[in-house]
Image (cartoon, rainbow, N blue to C red; front, side):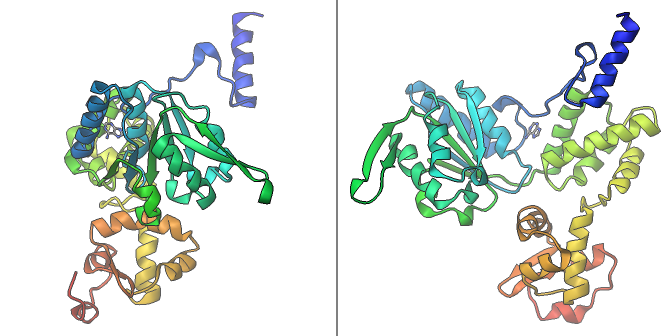
Length: 352
Ligand code: ADE
């Protein structure tokens, strides 16, 4: 085959089979995730806690304590689990609460771990109770009890495990049982990031992606990123595309405005779903209070998506208030969406 034919054949294979990547044309996969603690921006207290725990365990020649991270999606729980494995030199195995259906699913994973390995369980609050019970002895004394047969023939067999590090991640720490929660030596909540930290993350990612972002553009991107590194990185990729196709490739503040308007991300970083959520409370429920199930049914969205993804940031910026009788839209929500603020609605409540 001539070079031309070879190239064409490879391109065709690429089209027919998206999994096939011609070797000499392979797109570069750039990971924006920091690999080490020194590269991690923000969450300084969490980073310091981990540094101390890792160093202390190393000095004592021990395996570090189990770690539980709590917080909304996109704030770095998975990234920190990867970093723990990198820093301690262990291999990382990734699973999630809902993926572990039976006790055997977990036992199969546990028995294959080597000493110092990290087992990362995402959405650990969604792990079935029968599976969770195997974790208690595994976390505490690195054994699992397997029961063979049933009734009078039942025999229990204790299997020793290698000393591993369990890293759990949850968006809903309240759903975790006390026995499980108490077995984590380190428990840290991740907060939304400051504008300053998001600008630093944005600049670091821009460097890795080899794209020029003006200072005012980086500030605007950070303001619209809901305090979340995953969002800032996602939006950076969108504005990079926009700048490349519609301009000269440089990300200016004008490009950010145009690209994010197209994405439906407004000047406060609210998405279409955020705004639909707020409008539902205002239009259908007179501003609330209204229960989350009613909002979810009206929006035809999963309650979990609203509670885990939508509400945390809206609560943080005071657009929504959670009261004992349900959710209420705040004055700021009315103003932001361009509704007249009916003072009578707010006077009877003290907090907004
Ligand atoms: N990319 C995503 N999150 C990050 C963080 N916290 N620090 C540095 N880079 C990141």
